[in-house]
Image (cartoon, rainbow, N blue to C red; front, side):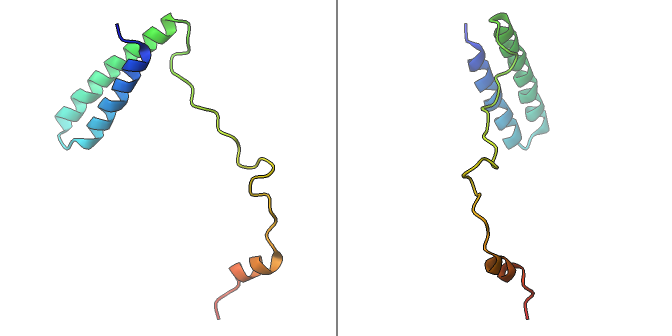
Length: 85
């Protein structure tokens, strides 16, 4: 029996295919199948004591020290916003 990650990969593929088709009937059927697979994935994860859906990787905030903390020199800043003559 496939695991939850298998079903989540299938959902991703089905939804991608549904966005690429110009036939609304086909797109609707792909979405319906994706919903069934998503329900299976959620059930398998919950049955195994995991959260219903995997969490996204935690991103580091951009305002951490050392990331773009260099002050902009005043003359360069003035030149950047100076009106064109």
